Image 1 (cartoon, rainbow, N blue to C red):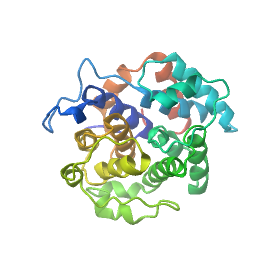
Image 2 (cartoon, rainbow, N blue to C red):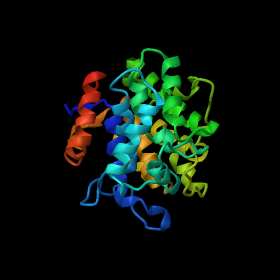
Image 3 (cartoon, rainbow, N blue to C red):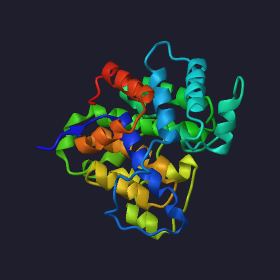
Image 4 (cartoon, rainbow, N blue to C red):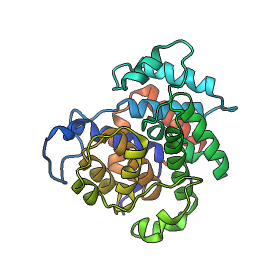
Length: 281
């Protein structure tokens, strides 16, 4: 029997790495759905670096935003060419950086560790909001982070869901996402047919990433659908991958390939986080 690794953080990083060679699909490059998952160009980007920054932050209590800022700046400046957006790149270099009212999807992209840590939904919501607020303090930026952390929390809590073919069949979208709801009633194909284009806002990219998970049947299919949206592929594959890894798990061969491509300092953070919060690795 194939082994699957249930680890949302690893799932986010794996999705990020797989997408990198396909980042510019939106510019008109055509590929089929069975495109190769790995190539010499498959590598981690800013999505993985910031996801692991949040992971490192969660290794020691109390959780305060000043510590998170310091960790994000330390790791971000250690990997300055990972592909940060312009505003966030400036944030990384600023002494005593302040949030800049961003509604960008970076808040949702880095939040997967928060969904793995706590025993209550309310604490998950609170800490997810904290993780976003240091930069993405617009209500939509906060919402994006809280919804993804909430979904990961619920998937990990409802272990019996793994007996179903897809989360959508179990009525997954009917479960309230704290105080917020996204409309996720379109399949990935319907999203593509609508003329969907590159979007970095939470409100126009996070629901689409969730849909790639809801209407798929495996981790691999989820990642392929996220990339084929031709949107903000790295972030959407990262978000969708975190959900799919929580639900189905990552095939071990994909997990091993991901671990092999991480530098030792980032790998150590992932290992420490996974051990502390009893996640497969």
